[in-house]
Structures are given as structure tokens and as C-alpha cells.
Length: 170
Figure (cartoon, rainbow, N blue to C red):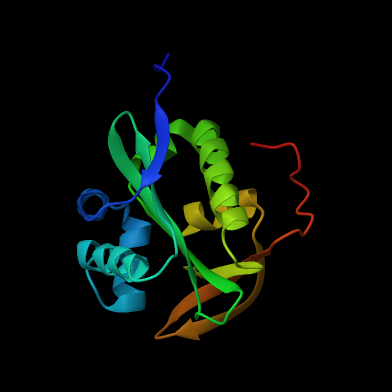
């Protein structure tokens, strides 16, 4: 039996971003390269630095003292109530299955509630199946998709106050 891990969610730092970027799971690393043209460390550092310029929050999921996921919600603009949600992680959260899913869902929902956004959305590479399944479990909806340079991207979103059928979870 695996020992029960310690989970915490803390404000993300550049040091945490480098740690996650250096160990990023292949699916997220591929998305970084395709979406931004950057390697994982550079992509996650750019995201953290962009968040530091505004009041938008960015958190790290720390498991057993090691940052394993970084996520945040960035408003599209100062005048917008729509946010861009992003999440990048290592392979370690996969080891904790439902426990990680529940903790991460609560942290993400808390961050969403604290934000000034009425909706959060982004795109995920369709072939990144673990992330697609996790997003579905979190309650995100999928609507449109597009193909760019031979890669299919799925648009996912969540609206504040919408009944996602998950009340009582997490």
C-alpha cells in the first residue's frame, strides 16, 4: 500500500515553474512546443511571469514537498470577465489518481470562484488523452475544435454558476 501523500496548493514561484518544466509530462510538453514554440521550461516561466504582471493568480500543487503541477486563470484583458485557464504538470499526479483529481478540482474551483471571471476556457491537444479525461472529470465542457498544422485542438470551457452535475464532489 502506498503511503498517503501530503498535498498543498501554494502561490507558484519561478523556482517551482522550473522544477515542473524540467519534469513535465510528455503530453503537456508537446502542447507547449506546438502552442508556443517554446520548450517546457521557457513556456511555463513565460506563463508565470505573465501572471505576475497582473492580479491573476497562479498556484502550484505540491505533493510530498515537490511541485508537480502549476495552474492559473488569466483574464483575457482588464475589461474582460472571461479567463484563460492553464495547467501544466509532471507525471507524478497520475500516481495518485482520484485523490489528486479531488484535491486539484477543489483548488481549481476555489481559484475560479475567487476570480472575476464568469467563464474560463482554453484549448487542449486532442491526442493528450489523459488531460482530456481529467478536464472532463473536472466538469469542463467541450464545444468546437480546429486543426492547426495537422494537430487537432479541442476547446474546453466552464461557466461560473453552471450546474456541472458535480455538486458534493471534491
